[in-house]
Image (tube, rainbow, N blue to C red):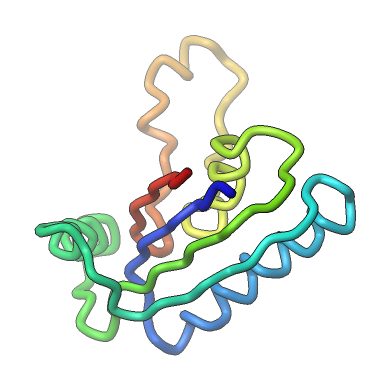
Length: 131
């Protein structure tokens, strides 16, 4: 059973809403027959590798020009049973809850500078796919 694990810097006031959003997405996939079932396990203040939280805070500060004093790391572990498709592709789709998709130009020359169109993460995050 693969697990998509997001560690996100989120205000506590929005942490449960994010868990609900992940859960609702999993419910829609199950209803569409794309997976048998899924569970979202939400853990505030998980044990992290050294430096991860500092990196998430620095990312938020750089991208938003604000401090992250009212935010803490929350872990969302999404366990998948019977997924029909790519775990990595699903992980990237779910990441759109955390970072909005940029509108890229159709012009190939402009696309050479793709980073000019990147949008900051709403909530800085780290992902890990567990077997």
